Image (cartoon, rainbow, N blue to C red; front, side, top):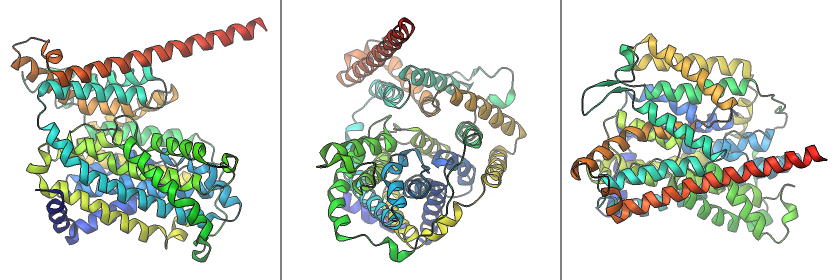
Length: 506
């Protein structure tokens, strides 16, 4: 079916009462956790994964997706009012949003971020609906060799283009790949790396891994961070209306931010955070008076918000059409689909049209619901910011334990999530990012399967990966990324040594 037929089919699925309910629950929870600093979409989706076992697949994915893009809306609230980013992608909003709040324009800032978020999201949905089918058609021409090479490139891009040390990112990808090999081998039936623990013969539970890395580790890390912000101001609806000058200054930054977000959202390893920072840098570059930025410029608020919301929508393009997640949240969404017996990839649109098109239309409905939630209910979100953290975090830990136990009704899973959380916290202290590990864990089994298929078809000849032009191109691009990251790390090391030598000489 073409795009318009698909959207009409999706509308019939998305407007069903239960689908609307799942969509509303997802965006409401997403906004809530976006407002609260230090929790994040990853931890929340991890908490909700056990719940999805008991609801239909389409409703489950609609709800989890609503949490993801709903958090992008809510993340700006704490950034503007408290100078504390609710989500990583909202960190750049603090720069001008908090300054606007200090100038008594918090209401205008909140109103314009909601409009910018809606604008970016809806155009992101249009990009998703328009380009995903075309990408899927190209994907149908891929064989096992191309899939393996593309996944390898995606993992290298995720580790080298993300924030932090590229070498540490690569190390976490390798660790994720190793964790993905734990359990019984599908082809031979041999149990691997289970250390005589029967519970590990089925592999490491993705729910326990996600909750440990992004739930317990994040909560423990957030408890240690000082909380200086305190919500004192009240935001009234009549104070939220922007002036004509605000509208005039905002519409082009919204458009540019949406373009930046749509592009970076679809690339592996970039996502909403990089999109928002790149959008802010672009606006500062093209501004007639760059000195206004950091002092309450409306452009510095609307551009990154449009960018991170557009990126949140277009991140689903490679995940759904090729089965390649762009970031850790998409890896978890991919895991949720696999848990429900759905194989993402080029055949998803033809095999599961209800899910694919229903999900896309639900994005549009969810964004309309988010505007309704964010504008009139600002007072409620402000009140939520007053919840003491010593009450909030123990409650989250209890939900993590209950959610983990509910998956298999096995106490071992609670021990596992606690151990993974402890390891995740130590890795975070050592500045190792958990996101590449999650990508490696989800993609590892898929990569192994396609590697074996390709070698089976070529009768064991590894040259098949270089003889096919597409797979060779992906592998060469991956090698270039790897060399670039190694050279960059060596250069940084040399600079640090030179600075240290100059300091000791001085």
